[in-house]
Length: 208
Image 1: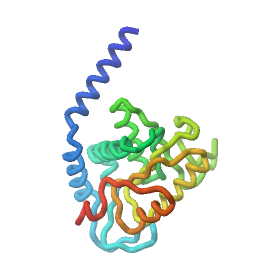
Image 2 (image 1 turned 120 degrees about the vertical axis):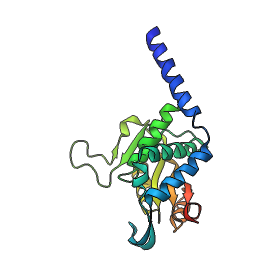
Image 3 (image 1 turned 90 degrees about the vertical axis):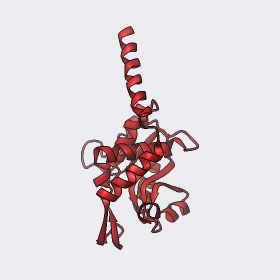
Image 4 (image 1 turned 135 degrees about the horizontal axis):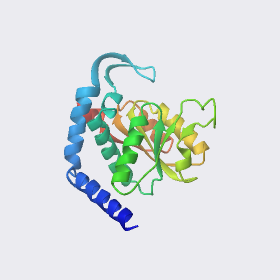
């Protein structure tokens, strides 16, 4: 028992030291902005998931799947989640864009000593086994309040779909957060549905 306690104490010291070395969240936010502009931001003519065309594109996965970028996204999103007025018992989102984000947030929360389990919402119910829409559901307390995350929000359609699915499973949506809000109606659509959107960056903050 003493060996286990000592091992846990050593792990805690290592984790706290790591976090203390990177406590300046403003510096981290600036570094994340640099990575997004370097890895994810593109100019040209693009068709978005919503069907709209745009003269720029933010390919969030190029940053969220990067080791440093994923870590910084997890840190910044976790900071927003910690500010929620009520305790958040899970963090999830629609596959594929949210997959690296929910994992990053969950790991960051564990290292911070306040572990939040992650879950993933499928686009279609699993065609075999449990037939679930939600992967990781068994790690969540029934009826708990959850946070939904996305890499980029345009119209908010994907998040509204996810909200419907998780609420149909009995969970409460306590927070909706994204890395980048393109400021093209998504925040307004979510607010109208009763779910204000929080973002690390708006389009204006990211590219001016």
